[in-house]
Length: 616
Image 1 (cartoon, helix red, strand yellow):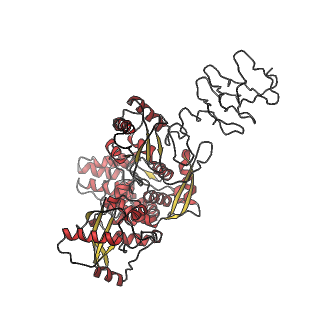
Image 2: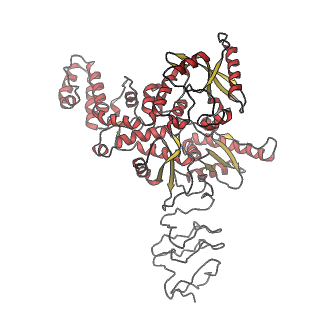
Image 3: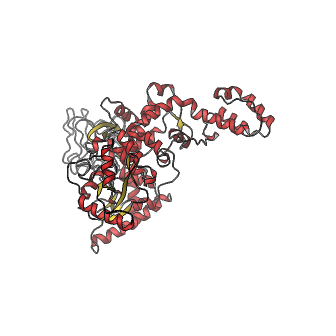
């Protein structure tokens, strides 16, 4: 496999990567530090004739010497280092540094040492980012990875969230006194009946929670303007509840913890946050109809006299913004409009924007944005580029059987179905979108700034006609079916009934040990159905209460009495034409005789011996 090897030298007082000196190096996973250093020096000397004979040191990107696996006391092995940082080999970069540069740097005020990942602080992160500016070839995932080094994976901040009210669960979690953005997130979703999905969050639920949170955040009253171009707007209630600070922190936590960026902030707001002077707002961003109409009148003035009349007509509005002035030329209209827009979007909201910045500073994201505005601005801004079928197909690596086997032949056919299904999703020929396919498999509806770790993969299943997913492992499990039409129909059905639609339907598997509510034919989410009463057991084999004619939600129907268990093997009261849920029907009343023709109450597991019940 290939990793990247670069050259690091002392420039000024710090060790910095030398631009244009990074090369791919083919090596083995079990290579140790000393052998890797020899290979790296040989490769660099081959392409750089000006390199002397050394000696050299092998360094991590932060300038510390490669001795142990980062974050452990284990001697360095490339495979162990890859496992520890969670990056693919192709994204690993190590550096060769001349001995005199390394020694000189060690003797200066900058201490070079090997550290555990939990010892990184925000100050370390900023220093590291300063030393790895854009000219070193740094990417967005690299920046997010560096920021994430301050997270202590040995501690957790807990979130208990209901999908129907994500905001409420998020507020409780972020406001908890023990919450820290430097702890890992442990997210537990609760189902509609309030029953926890018992499982350890190893990534999937966290990513889903952060995706739903970012989707909900854009609709909060602290933001104004059309979809995709929202800016921060003053709201007294939100100021009292400190929602601006919380919103900034939520965004920082989402980005650095592996979730999506907000992708809804206006470009002008993000440029202002990043310290960039550009401002290109248009009148279309103004949601107040009167103000928008006034600005359009000024902008459309055809003569100097018309412009002067317009400014006099709207002088109170312009004076409030400090934009009222003596107009001397028709060109002044664009300056007036631009100045008012900047006041309306930025200046009048500066106090709450500053509070938003403080929240965004969590985990060093705000400082990184100012260091790398060109790289990180798209993480926060609305992005027009859509996810495509080709991107998704290349993202998931298939786990294939040995070549030439019967299983491999089936898997090859299913891969063809999968590729065509993604194209149909992209072209709007299916019930779901490409983004919803990604959400089903990973808990994300867009590719996160940090990259997807672990690498998404495809597996093939024969024991279910519906797709399944393990969001913790970023794994999509495809059914192996005989024809494409059935494959497409079942894929639609499974994905539509996963999180984002209704998470109790077929096809959803959170991937937790022992937890699987995705068996075909099981539907417990019908209107009026309450399956949480004492004595009710609907999980036995052969029980299906979703057949035509069965309606348990009619007035007067009560199937939750103690001791009543209609879920035993072989019992099916949902056959066509059988409806015992009519108004006023109660089968536990005294004197009730259900021994009519065609009624069979002798099936195993049926307990009709309630007090007052007469079946003779």
